[in-house]
Image 1 (cartoon, helix red, strand yellow):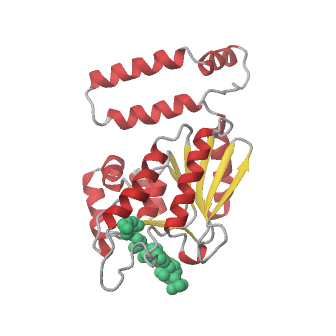
Image 2 (cartoon, rainbow, N blue to C red):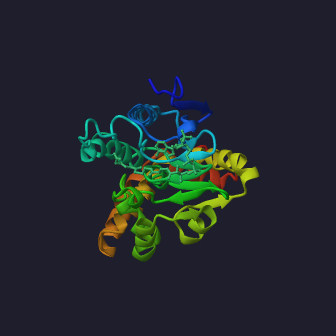
Length: 267
Ligand code: T3D
């Protein structure tokens, strides 16, 4: 059991929105084996629950997440023998990364404070990232002799280009949320006093949108960076074919004609 809390992950449901809050505030919500497993389990459950239409990930206290818990038994050398970090990454971070990126509903990172190392990756893996103006992002890996992980080497150049990605990853500076938004690393940063309200508005909006179409959009954008225009066009046609036969398209068009809000239900 986590030394800081009986439950290192707080799970809360409000309508169609599921909120997952990392709850190890004293350790800046750093990720130990228990928390990583709890997060993965909660995401798996949400993926199977048709009534969930948006997942929000946030952190308790002054941090979003400080990355791997550097004091946890899974990383601390024992009797001078270092732990196999590759094994840890494969067992914990890779499944979590792939799970997040394949969620059948939109995901929202609510970054209320520092997001460092794998904690920054956790945020950036989400579809939409909103941060408090006072929050910072840190590629903390180089300071401890590691490379960016949890998808960061894939995400960073796609989000901000090679030059910024290398600068962030090599220097490991604190990147203020406002600058992160300017660079395109995140969707937006908002004043601290309106952060909670803004997160709620965004989560509810995402939950009302056509989940299936949003998730296809995520997949096409990710794929599109690696393929020719012709293949992207084929993939778009295939996606429209599938979505055109689905409920949400008929509902969206009917709602438009009837001048009423659409009630999307597909997932
Ligand atoms: O298996 C593998 O390792 C491979 C996978 C790697 C993935 C990674 O995430 S590697 C990167 C790991 N994270 C870091 O290196 C960040 C370490 N933390 C920091 O650099 C700083 O704490 C922050 C810049 C994030 C915040 O600084 P500050 O001054 O606001 O807070 P603080 O005083 O440093 O931290 C407050 C407490 O949280 C403190 O505990 P204490 O002294 O009050 O008992 C500190 O030790 C603890 N804490 C912060 N980060 C971690 C942590 N404890 C364990 N692990 C942490 N990552």
